[in-house]
Image (cartoon, rainbow, N blue to C red; front, side, top):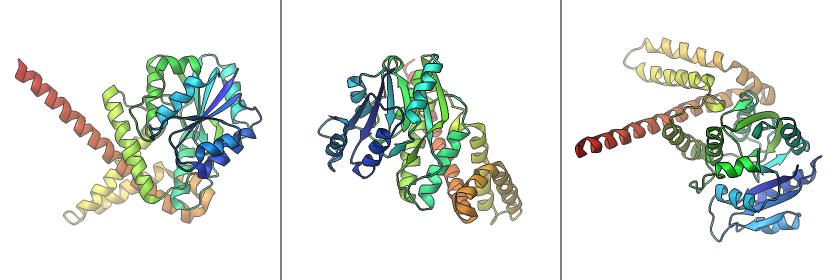
Length: 335
């Protein structure tokens, strides 16, 4: 089995060296490493070439990671395409684990792993984001309904059959989720393998978190699910997170109602207590990795995440209903 590692990069020199160093330390060396340079201006391509990777210059203007991955995949020689983000440092055994899973399970077409529980970037937001991602993937279902390209692999045949990553995403977004949905529609099996891990090197800020979670994740993901007519029940969208979102909304609405109905404070307290109970395991996990002061701050960010993610999905649902109403009205006028 030949493994082709594909790394899309756009001005990612800051972390690319660590990403490539980790790959070259793998216990199972890749058969080739292709860095798809998406018109970087910071020397990312030159750095990758110096470090022994094959570099593909995608174009003279950025086209997005989906296009970059697809162009590199078209050149790759491997039986398995391994996708790694430029800000992820794979664990030494990750490639060997991927190969072993594919060899032992011919029925599996794609798999993906998880960030580890030792994020590189300090600070409340960075540690919360990376640890929450780790926790979510560690508790996800083995039989996944989506795909993740930060640390994931796909058999070449399945990738070609699915048509690769959809290229209508000009920025990092949900192109990997959309590919996962394509694979599942084709009857392909995708596994979440939480033991396959890498360290996330990205430094998050509060505003970067909001912009990414809302504009690049929740809104396009909501539109995709409504268009496909399928609401996933896995990872961030499982029943646990849905119930948590409902409780967070209940807390907010109860607090807003207090000036008009003081008894609403009791409802807010009950909803908050239920939310804490529901996520007690997550909060204990965060406390073990950063202390209770960190856990309290992270719980606040998690509460905010539940609110704005729910709001984004609600906006998508309203827009979708509005579009359906307009189409129905036009059809009625034409009769």
